[in-house]
Image (cartoon, rainbow, N blue to C red; front, side, top):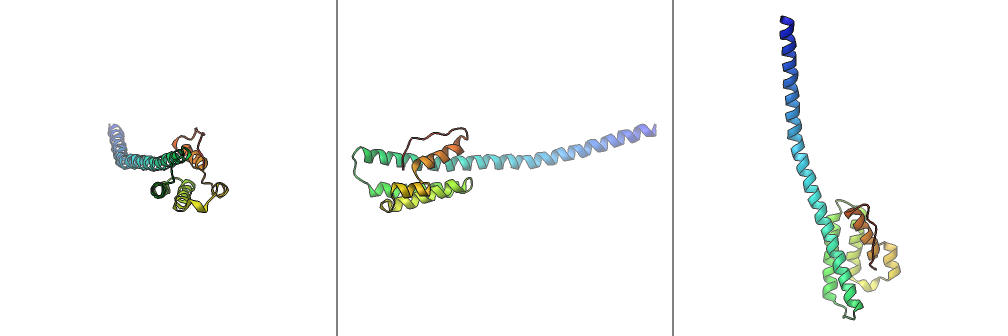
Length: 147
C-alpha cells in the first residue's frame, strides 16, 4: 500500500511541477506576443512612411510631366517624407533605410544628381519601390515608376 502512496505522491509532485512550468511559460509568452504585435505595428508604420514618400514623389513627377512648375515647397516636403521613412525603416532593413536617406539627400538639391548618379546610388524610384514591395509582400516584384 505504501508503494501506491509513493506512486501517487510522485505523480502529484510531477503534476505540480508541470503546472508550475506551464504557468511560467504562460507568463513568458504573454509579453512575447505583445512584443511581436508591437514589432508588426512598427513595421507597418515604417512601410506606411515609405509608401507616403513614394506616392508623394510619384505625384510630384506626374505634375511635372503635365507641365506644372517646379515646386521648392513640395521638394522640401519630399526631403521630410524620405527622412522619416529612413528613420523608421532602420529597424527592419538597413539597405532600404539607406536608400531612403539618399533619396532625402537627393531632394535637398536634386540639381546635383542626374539619372545616372541616381542609378549608381540605387535610389531610382523603381529600385526603392522594388525594395519596399519585397518587404510589403516578399512574393511581389513589380514596379512602374522612374528616378
